[in-house]
Every structure is written in structure tokens, then in C-alpha cells.
Length: 176
Image (tube, rainbow, N blue to C red; front, side):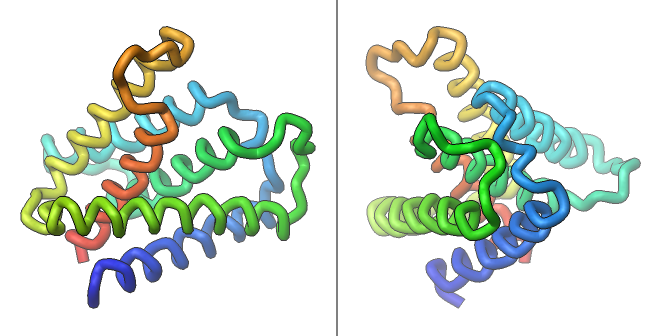
């Protein structure tokens, strides 16, 4: 399978899980501020790294499930960034699906553009290196959040969330 098809298959699976959780929990995620979303992504990435380093896993949730969670939390962050301020906390399932699909499509466009320019170099990477890149991006986002987004030359938190999402997709592709 080629990268666009692999991306589409992974995002379809992530979307299905996200919308099922929306059915069960509603839009409880709307209460989260961006630093809280960042911390949730950190928890997932840190768990992946701990398991990679120790080779020991005591909780049954698999590592690939954590990469799926990173994808969905990144999409939550992107939706939170772009939803109008007057969007009600309780969104309809249709509105959630629309926002999710919009952000996923934007990310797909970015992935294809970067894949072209970088020549799919990620295919030669180790999943552990991708985990480290996600953690590095998280530290950058935390720093930007701590300085109120007043970056001098850095990419935006949006760009970091998009990169982390794509790194998690790459990790899942490499794990297949």
C-alpha cells in the first residue's frame, strides 16, 4: 500500500474510534484547554517510550493503541484551536465528524507535501526515534504554551500538533 492509502486506512480507524467515544461520552473533551491536551499526549508518548526502553508492559493497552490516542488527541487540539469561540461545549455528532474530517484532511495535505519534500525518509526510521520526535515536539509545545505563544522564530503549536499526528501515523505504518 502507498502512503496516502495507509494514512487513509489509519485515520478511518481512528475516526471510527473517536466517533464511537463521542457517542459514549459526548464532547467531554471540549472542556480541555490546550495545555491539558498537550499533557494527555505527553502521557501517551511517555508510556510508549517507557515500554520501548524497558521492554516491560504491565497494563494491557497496547502501544499501537497509544499511537491511535496520540492521533486523536492531536485532532482534539486542532479542533479546539479552530472551532469558533462561541461553539457550544455539547456538539452534535455530525458537527464533531465534520470538524474531525476537516482537520484530518488538512493533516493529510501536509503529510503528502512533506512526504514529497523529504522523500519518505521516515520509512527508514525506527519507531523508537519517532517516539522521541513526538516527545521533543511536546516539549516545544509546552515551552510555547509557557511563554504564551510568543515565539520569535519557532513554528506554531498548530504545526507541532500536525507533525505529532503524522509521526504517530508513521509509527503505526511501520508497526504493521
